[in-house]
Every structure is written in C-alpha cells, then in structure tokens.
Image (tube, rainbow, N blue to C red; front, side, top):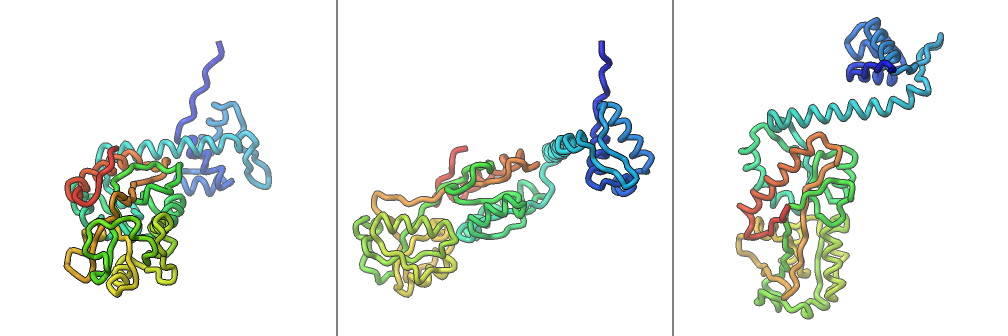
Length: 314
C-alpha cells in the first residue's frame, strides 16, 4: 500500500507564494520575517511532500519550474479563501468593526441616508461608512475596481455578476409650477402630457434615461438644452416656469415640505417607479454581513419611510 504524502500546510503555501513573487529567497525571507535557512527548509519539505520541484535554482538566480507555475495560481486561491474564511469568522464572532466604502447616486443619498445611518450606528457602534456619491454607471465600475465595498444603485442595469439585494421601490412624482394650467389636479391624464416640456438631469444619470422613456411613451418633449446638474437646480427651473419635471419621491419628501411655488401630482393609472438595491462583489469577504446589512436597511426603511416608498421582499 503506497505511503500517504503529508499535506502541504498553509504556512508552506504562503512561503511558496512569497518566493514565487520575488524569485529571491533572501527578499522573500525578509518579507516573511523569518530566516533564510528556515524558508529554504520549508520549501524543500513542500517539494518533497508534493514529489515535485517548484523552483529551478541556477547561478543566475531562482525561477519557477513548469510545475511551480501551474501550482502557483492554486496556492494563491487557497490562501485567498483562507483569508476570507478568517474575515467572515471574525465578523461573526465580534460583529463588524471596520469602515466600508459605500457608493450611492446623488439623486438618492442625501434623501435616504439621514433616515438610515443613525439607526445603523446604534445597532453597530463600531461600524463606519465612507460615503461617496456618483452616477450609477460610475458606481458599477468603481465596485468592480474595488473603489467601493458596496453600492446602492437602481436595480435596472446592475451587472449580473454582482450579489444584489433589492431594498425598496420609489415613486417618481410629477412636479409643476403653481402657475401651470394643470397645477390644480392631483392626478394628470396621460394624454395631457403630450407636448409638455419636461426637464431632467444630465444623461450620465440613470434617472435621465428613465425620464426619457416616459417622455417618448407619452409624447412629452424632453428639454435637452436645459438639463439640470442636480435635483435642486431642476426644482428651481420648474419654479421659474421652464417646464415640468419628474422628481424622486424621497427627494420630494425630504426637500419639499415647505410650501413653495410648486405643485406635486401623479399620472393617472400610471405609477412611475424606480427600484433600488444594495450590491457587492460575490468575492467580498464581508458578504455574509452585507446580507444582514441589507435586511437592516429594509427594516429601518419600512419603519421610517413606508409612507413614501415600498420596501422590497427579500
């Protein structure tokens, strides 16, 4: 019966990867904070246990052998998996005690996060968010690159290779100047939007394309020459009678509670909605906690904003 070879230890794999990256035993031992003889001895034991030569040692230096090149990617994957395992175990044992980079669109962040983050802080007193605002397409790219740990984004358009947890659905409200002929109606007949001038944001925002689709469907005229740079500028252009605008329900709830020269209404029998989701990379070591976080988001939003939005079912 053949004798079983000893399994490589994680320490040996770590040493192997360090030498493979530096191709220099002296530099690798310095990076690992061990002596060079100790490193050499562990690599020899690893090679003996595998029955393979991982490195070629020549007068000109150290090179990976063909077998070493093939095994390197597998060793790196094993070490990465163990790092993620330890991170998840630490979070489960101690709770989150770190800072996450959160990305969110500027048409949502200021009108959602003040209702959510204070209560999250009460639940997780060591948890912190570094929040940055950007257009959804830029958020998706940033999440891929690691600029963000997680993002809140419109559900439509999110790449399939992200882990996605729907959070809530938000209505879009039609906002008119108080001097507009339809400003006395709470429900506007869809046919009455035909030919109406509609203002919106720049086309880098997902919000822009949603409003464009509405205008094309109802025959309204999107004012491309007067695109707003923010929801506030859009509102001010409506006040000045430059056109009507569709504004997110959370913005209306948060920023338009003081009476002004505006009228908020909806299109009859045609709710216009946008759905938001929390998303992260499927390789994130914090993915277990992120699912818990999505559930916390939904509970807080339901408790504080259910009169404005509809919370998604997990």
